[in-house]
Image (cartoon, rainbow, N blue to C red; front, side, top):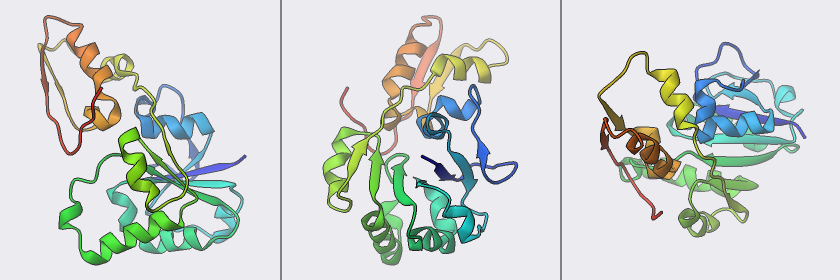
Length: 196
């Protein structure tokens, strides 16, 4: 099977492959295209229909950048051959501030997808209201590699923020941080959380 993965990442060129040990592969949304050997595209790049029709599946990383190119989304969903899956990157914090039109478009988008992939079991029931096929996708982040990759010098404290909060399986990052007793560990939580 051939997969395409659409995301907000800055790319050197369209259709790249994610390489193992790239920093983004330590996150769940970066691990999925690596596991599937998917060709990765940015939402902002217009593509010919012939390019998209060679794929069996197109996976859309559902994040804020997705709405920056509505024409590309409409093009993807108008195709007959590839099946479409939507990967929910995390909770939508700003849902209440969306316009009614954008909320409506989002719901219509889910209804058109063949598969919806979410991070938490708690969200499955909600998304089944829109998409008949819903599954969970939880890949533990390789926090040790990520921390070593980012830290250039020894630090006295660590703050777990953004992508390291509960919808991304934050407990693993918290355990790694707490395993270093000399570090002060702080954690910012945003949006929904889940029980462990």
